Structure formats: C-alpha cells, structure tokens
Length: 390
Image (tube, rainbow, N blue to C red; front, side, top):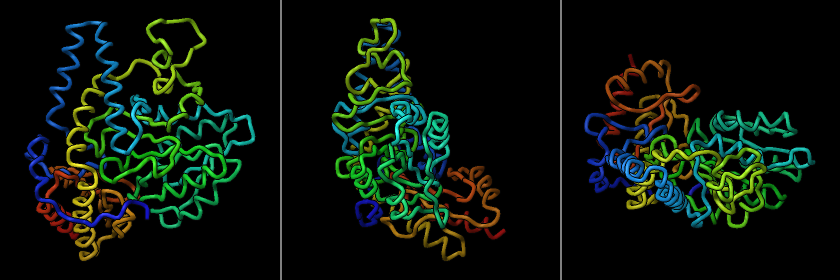
C-alpha cells in the first residue's frame, strides 16, 4: 500500500484543540492542504524572537542557533528522521536547487526522473539544470491523478542520477509507493529526494522504512507553521558526500569567522543551508509543531480519512466529480471535488468563510484537519452541493 493502513474514525475529542486556532471562531477551515490554520502561539513565538534580539543584539545568534537545531529536529521527528540530520531554509525550491547543484552533470549518470504531475515549482528548478547536462524525464499520467508505479520504476535505470518525487500528488492527493521507488533507485545507484510537503502531518511517514536518501518539506500546510520554514533531511552519512554549489555563509564550517573563499563546508546539516536564516519563521514553526506531536499523526490520519469519506460519498451521491483516489490508503489528507462552474462556486464559498482552495484540472480541494468537525464537513458539502446546482 502507498500509506500505512489506518481505519477511518471520527474523533470528537480532537475538538478540544479548536480553541487554539483563532480562525476557527468564525470560519469553516478546510484548507490545511494549502495553508494550515495559525496556532495561537504564533504571536508569543514572534515575541520570543524579538525579545532575544532586543536583549542580546548580535549575541542573540547563540540562542538562535539552538532554535535552528531544535526546530529542525522537531520536524524530523514527524517522519522518523534521525536527530541532527535536518537542515532548515526558507523554501523547498532552494533545497531542490541546492541538491541539484551537488551533482556533476557532465558524467554519464545524468537522468532526473520526476512524475509529470509534480508541483510545477519543483520542475522549474530541475528544468534549469538541462543547460548543465541534466536529462529531465517526466513520467506521464494516464488519468491526470496518478502515475502508475510500474511506469515510475521502469523510468529509473543505471543512468539515473536522482529521483526527486512527491509522496502526495499535488493535483489529486494520490499517494505514491515511495518505498518501492526508493528500493528501485537504490538498486541502480540513484539518489532519492522525497517531497513530503503535501502529506507530512496528515499521513504517517517512516523515513527509515522508505529508505529515502533525502526528505524535503515545509511547514505552512498540515504542520500549521506558516511560510518561511522548509527542511531537508539527509540520511546518516550522506551530508559529507555533498558539495553544493548553491551555498552561503551559514554553510561554512565557522560562519562567524568570515574567511575568504573558497568555502570550507560545515560538517553535517548546515552544509546544505545558505545565507542568513529566517529566524522569525523558525520560532513560529517550532511552537506550531507541538500540537501535531501531542496528538500524533496516526490519530490525525484516522480522523481526516473519515471526514474525507463524507466528502467523497456526498459528492458522488450529488453527481459531482471526485478527482482524488476513492480508496483510503491511496490518497492523502484532502479530496478534490469538481463540476462545471466550480471556480465561481469557490469564490462564493470563500466569501462565506468556507476556507478551501481551487486549482485548475482539480476543482475544489477540501482538506479537513484534526480541528475539523463532522458537522463542519456536512455544512461545507451542503453549500457545495447547493451552489453546484445553480
């Protein structure tokens, strides 16, 4: 299966966390697949950042370095990553480019295998390396929702340098069999870079079981950590093999020595960082992860699967099109619902404070989280169905 099998179960006790997310007071929030609701700790987190700056000035870096490490390790615990092996930066695009810059494209092993349904942001990055010799292989989809596993495996061969793919397909929520893909890549000597942005916090992930070389993701979706915090995990022993051409002073072995070039790379996680870190974002993210750890992703998964089933069943009964896999184990935390005029309906729903998003070739993306109730999902579907019939 693409994800650990968990029985769907609505969990009314999760409602006790609702008071910690201010937007829930006047909104139905089913947009956590795009940007999670802000946790109430965000203002205090930002205050802690500014307090350190105000009190210590430049010496605040001593505190801030500890925050970088603590935030990185907290993110890694969510996917079973080993402590001390995760880097932070502002966004996934940077980390994709940094990893790409470690590869010598002049050698014969130059293929980059990506699903054609990958988020365009990622393809933008890798496509630019064609000018340096990279051969981009976009593995096609037949249905616009999924990429056949056999097709992915067949595309990975002895000429493949790296396989930078997503756990969850951004346009449908379909899950890919990452364990099988990592095994195939390992057999032919290719690296794997798995993007978990679409799934982390909504689907249980075990990095060790996958056997992935690297895992990349960020905080502003299911982790409710806001923009500006992305992370890159590298399996133990890999950091020291990587020499990124995309770099900066924070990747230096002694960043505060300000030595002249060439750079002397740091050992470990800072090697894949770059310039000055976005410290305010890391403060916010660190606090935001705490409820996810406390609740546990398996419990979140059971609840959101049950809510997703309601979305699917009511959509199909009303004659709407579901553009996500119907099987529980095959999809992530959200469901795509489409029909003629769905974009206009989306605007009306947002005006009524049913928070969600809309995407081309996808429709309405309904992403309940642990703080979403069964009643809210039925109210959301009541409005979607009513508006779809106008």
